[in-house]
Length: 283
Image 1 (cartoon, rainbow, N blue to C red):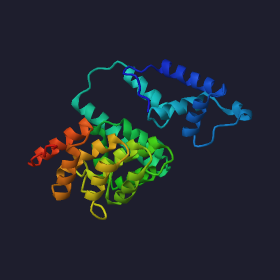
Image 2 (cartoon, helix red, strand yellow; image 1 turned 90 degrees about the horizontal axis):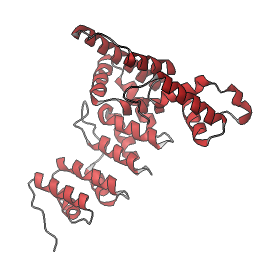
Image 3 (tube, one colour; image 1 turned 45 degrees about the horizontal axis):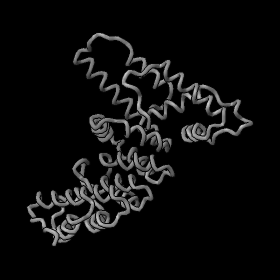
Image 4 (cartoon, rainbow, N blue to C red; image 1 turned 120 degrees about the vertical axis):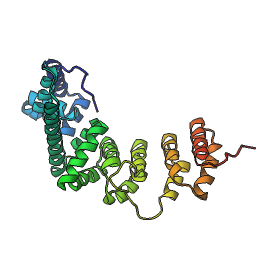
């Protein structure tokens, strides 16, 4: 997901949109994939290229930056550039409320439209402060389950990026309905998707209430820590075992503490020590 520059320029973004359109009309494969991903229709065939306009390229660019339209992106950039007097505390609170209202409305609109790509991408761009604030607002209005529905749908999206973004968002947004689809995602072919799903499935600290799950999750976590094909996924599983102190976990951590992978070994040793367990020495 591309990031806006710290001081975005509307002229610069217009130039990017023109270059994207030129690349599309020139037959660039990546440009065509970007159009197809965000226009809710297949990229036009060569004979239909005359139908593609600069507005289409601007829309694609806005979606890639996490905005629902070019107009919203342009308004954001113009507001960032406009000089203004320091706002009063009341003005800042009012601006914050308007921002959260618009954010919640966008999340609900994407959920209703089944636009899981835009929904996940927006969450990926949001700082934790905004995620928690909009969660509180949606929960108060009873609309949080609608957004969760959209994120659950995104877990089965054909694009790994969307599955990753939606799984990551559920770390803070998930309810009990998410346990089964997140558990299913532990078999995803893409390591970072498995890693995000594992964290969202097993970490209750970030959620409004414990997620819960059918069956004992500890064997699942141990299997990931020991056997996942990706060393990064295995490393990420070890800290999650810290809150589960039983003989199975201790035995697995002792095994991992002897791993040839330095990071995996060191992390397992640290978890054992924090649990008050003596680390066994090899040999």
